[in-house]
Length: 146
Image 1: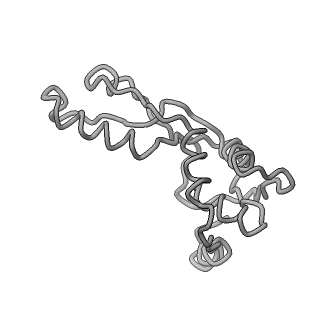
Image 2: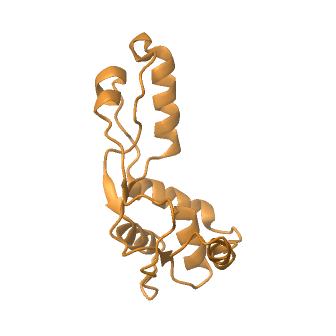
């Protein structure tokens, strides 16, 4: 989602947000996920357990769009909130990392702001391909958006 929003902003278009923008997600940096996997491999007590890995912080999709705009120094493109939903989407999806903390000693190290800053820095000089219109048309064609 971050890359999609960034591509929209880089192409001078507002990010498109489904539903009302208040659905919540948990964004975790890939380095935190990799470290958690290593910890699980090195911790015998984790064998057979389903352990959630995340940031432990739920943020709204509209909030993500605002944070991405701020990270990219964009203030004139408010998100387009469609009011439509995609079939199969869940309202809120975020991790309870209590077990990861207890069993693995896991704590996320990279904040959302740090991860966004890293993404924005990487995107400088990249060509951003915005394929959202094609994806939305495909959702409509398959009856997966209402």
